[in-house]
Image (cartoon, rainbow, N blue to C red):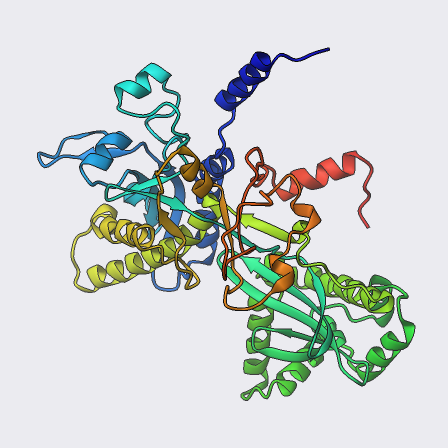
Length: 484
C-alpha cells in the first residue's frame, strides 16, 4: 500500500490539531491545578501546629483569569489584553479556612499565573475564528505565562529520580545514595560499609549510624527477621553486624545508644524524644513522618542493604545517565514547589494576624485577616525574576519569538542541574536511552554542551497518574501479586 505525500501531510496536520508540541507542559499545569493543589493543602493542613490557633484548611479552587478595573468592576481578561496593558495573566485562588472550630469560610488568598492555552485559560476550547477575534494566532501552541505583559517560559529541569537508590564508587568506597523527597524537602540517605565490615547509615545530622542499630530502634528486634528481609547475600557481613549489637533487646535501648553515639545531652526522656523526632521527620521521609511508619522504614532499610550487598558482590554500579534514573520536572512540578512554600508562609502569617487581633480584643472576620496581595506578589516576583525555591535561578526565561521554530525550541528545552563549569564528561555525552526522547543535534556549544537539551519534536513527558496507593495495590493484586 502506497502513501501519497498529500495524505501524509494531512495526517500530520490532523495529529497536530489533536496534540500540541508542548502538550506535556500544558498537561502538567492542568494536573497541578486539578490534583496537586489540593494534595499540597491537605499535607500542610496535617502539619499545622494547633497549640495556640485552631486553624483548618479545606477545599481549594482556581477560577478563570479576571481583571478588576479602577471602578471595581470584574470581567474576563484575554492574553492579548494582558500583553498590551502590561498585566499579569492570572486567576484568583479561593481556599476554605476555619478558625476555632467555626464554619469554613471561602477566602481569596491570592492569584496564580495561568498558562496560555491550558484548561484554565480563557482561550481554552475556542475555535480558530474565535481565537482570531481575540487577537490570538491560532498556530500559537501556548505553554507559557504572561507576567506584567512579558511572555515567560518555565524551563523544564532534568534531575535524578527521587526515592530511588543509586550505587556508585566514592571516596568512602561503594556507596548507596537515595534522595528521600517529601513535599519540597529532599533529605539524602546514604549507606556505606567501613573497613571492619559494619554497615553505616547517614541522614540529616545523624552521620555513620550503624544500620542494624537503627533497624532495631525502628522496631525490628529479632535478628532472624532482619536476616530474612536482607536475604543470604553475604552471611559473613551480616554475622559481623549482628554480633556487634546482639545485646540490644528493645527499641528504647537502641534509641538511647543512638543518642549516645550522636553525643546528645539531657535526661533520658529528652534524649529519646529528640532521637524519635529526628528519625520520624528526616529518615526516609517519603514513607511517612509519623511513628506508625517506623516499621515500614526498617523494612525499607533491610531492602536497601540487600540491594547494596548484591551490587557489591557482583561489582554493579548504577548508570546515572540512563534516563530511567532521571526525571524531567515540568511546569506543574516547579509550580508545586513554589506554591507549597508560599502557602506555608501564608498560614504562618494568618496565625500571627489572628493572635494579634485576639490580643487586642478586636472583632474580626476570617476574610479581613487574609492578606492576599502578599501571596500574589511572592509568586509574581518568582516568575518575573526566575529566582525559584531551593536557590535556583533562571527558572523562567523571556519568550524568544524570533520565529515559530525558536519559540517551539525554547518551550521544549530541558536544563540539567549539574554546574556547567565542571567537566562531567559522561553527563554531556549522548546516551543510547536519549533515542526518540531528545534531539541529538540541538545543544549549545561551549560550557553548556550536553547539559542543555531539547525534547524530540514528538516526545511526550508523562505526568503523575490519577491513582492513589490503595488503587495501585488493588490493581497489582488483581494481576496476581501477593502480599508478603
